[in-house]
Length: 109
Image (cartoon, rainbow, N blue to C red):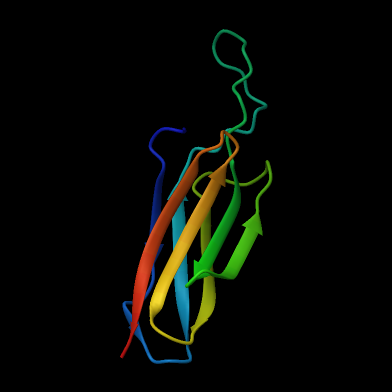
């Protein structure tokens, strides 16, 4: 597991049924390309976030496949229509097998 990895997500706490909301995500992750070497000349293993998904009440809202040229601390901003109250689940998958998750609830009101 990479050190210091922290997902951050902003989702409105409330929306009206059928509203389109803006979701912002950022994950603090150094992203190692696998091309650099350490001071002893050993290749530093690749460690990038390769997949990001967002689900609402278990249904896929958005997904992205990331590749070696992705920058550190990947940021996503996207819109989603909220049909009902529920939970957004966010998941980031790392090359080293680590899975980072966050969940945010939204109420209808």
